[in-house]
Image 1 (spheres, rainbow, N blue to C red):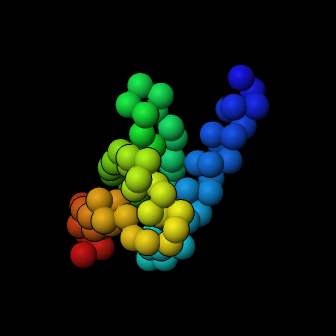
Image 2: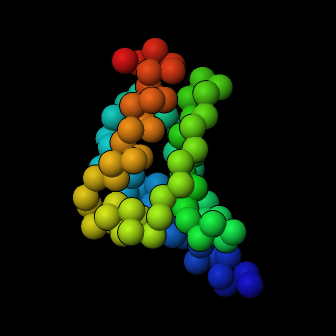
Length: 90
């Protein structure tokens, strides 16, 4: 089980790195990105937070694959814009 957990943690780290690569304004705006895999829903949960505001979105496997391939994650992009709006960056 420890090996599986290590793999999931590595995958979460790579997913966050790819999200930051696709959406570089996340870093410039100080938005924190975290990802974890939800076994119950079989989807990745991406949390975006800044200044006490947090938005979570679920990414289906095909969405994660699109992110890994360098294509935009449309649903995630909408959440990023929503968080920016909440904290007054838009």
